[in-house]
Image (cartoon, rainbow, N blue to C red; front, side, top):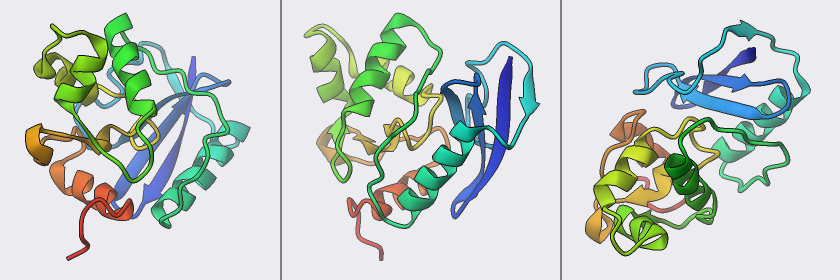
Length: 163
C-alpha cells in the first residue's frame, strides 16, 4: 500500500507518494508516466513524517537553496532504470550531464536513447534530478513534465539565464 499527499509547487501541482518508509514517487499531476511505477492502492495520508521532510526539501529547493536529502528514496523500476536513476542522483546541484555521458558510465556499448527512456521514466521528479540531463552539445531536450518546467528548474539552479 502507498500513501500520498499533494504539493503546490511554483511550477505546478505535484503528488508525493511513499510506502510509509521511503519516497516512491514525486510527479507533476500532468506529466507523462504519472504513477506508472506503482501497482498498489494509494491512500491520501497527509500527516506522514516523511511527507513533512519532503515538503520542506521542495520548499527550500524552489527558494533557490540546495537542500540535503535526509529521507529514504525507493523508486520502483528495472535494474537498468535503477542504475540510471542512481547516476542521476549523483549529478551535483547546479551542474548538468548529457544522455551520452550517462550511457558511457554504464557501458561503452550503451545508447543515449536507452538512457533517455530510463531518464524519462524517473518516478521521483526534482529529487532525482533528471532535469539536469541535456542532449548532445548541451541541447535542451524532453522532460516528462514538459520542457517549460525543465527550463524553470534549470533556472532555479542557475544553469540557464532567467531572461
